Image (cartoon, rainbow, N blue to C red; front, side, top):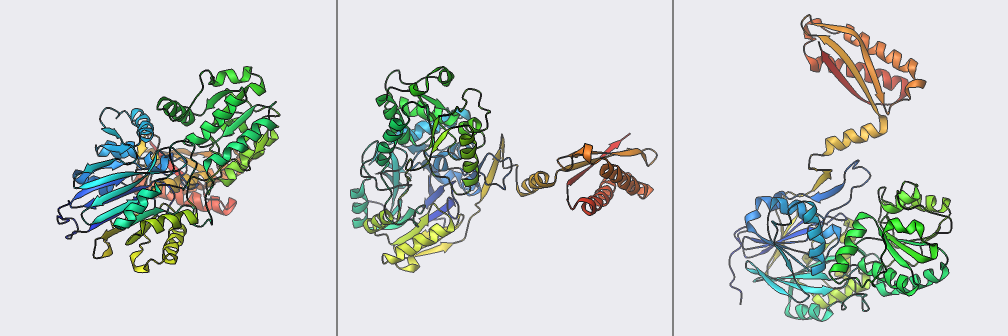
Length: 560
């Protein structure tokens, strides 16, 4: 039995639900559940940069709230091994060293990241099985088996003295999964019968009617592709984390006496880890190195690769533009894009498809992908089983959250008990009441190379400016002893105009700068900011009048 202590953080015995990512956005899922000055963190993912984030590698959550409360955190529990749920863990664990709990596969994938970040020896990892219950401080955490597009996905039930907070994780109701057992609907029903205080349920496909197809329905499609392309080399691009999809390709390759090569760093890593942990059944001798593929007959090999989203540096994109060092598309190749474009990636995917077709490949798009997320009827099923007192839609953009809230109302839930929130909003729930409390700091942190958080809005604005209008560097030499300008200014253009065709424009621009510095107050020449601003203003005005462009102007003062 739980003793019911007072939650010192909120001044009451309520449970605080603190979403720090994954609401009103796609990706970087992370939620803190807080009770009695203790915190359990669910997931810690990344998001991928949009078109405005030039040069940014990944986006991680803002950990400010967790860092301020690091002594309260008892552990991080993982729903499944997708990047938008585990990709941010190394960045969090560098700041806050707490134990992590997840399936054998999820922990294996996380360990690979911890190794890359050189913190593998400092983080305590714990593998759990479906049905496991662990104690983290005064809360008990239960891992409930679900089905998704990666094996060993969990829903998380956090048992507190106030009641159960249930997080669905990413799920669909797949009665014939490729790996493992079907979703544990019985346990959801048991929790619903006992009473669920708050339900956090994913909203990705809430706008789609009906049911999501089983992953196993893809098998016959692959079988048909292998038969139709019996004389061709087959290449299949999919998400590296979709291990069940990879398994189906390997199964068909073995059945058709083909060898399998894996291309793409993330794909190689995931296949290696999944094979070692027993999540992939790989027949002995079927795998070959990518370097051997060009030497083999087309009908002898199938290649599994990354790049189904048109990512510029992924294997498929490099093959499409002819820059891949080890693989070249040849006429007659059958290339299967076993995914659907994530919103925002459509243009990149279409570009890759066009280039592949231009090189003579047959590109297959139809019936080679099913979603890993529940559609409307499956979501209704879970709601009907759980019967929560309070509901928080999660994992989706605002329109998804709003549609999910409306679905809950259709099922008879009181509108006052539904909380459509955004990251940073704190929801306090107890047996007697629920309310939105004061928000906490939350947002996004941009990762560029080894820099974490050093790229902000100002840097992005400058990068956008450079990408659109280019750069003009104006070099002015100053004799600081005699307070005078030495010689004539020099201009360097990058990304603004083609110099050989714009000699007159640049010559006139030099004259503008020269006149600007001739008109300077001689007593202020030592004030570099004054000199720079005068040069920048005059040159900017001239270039706009002549070209209707506004390049970034960078005045440089050389002191002699």
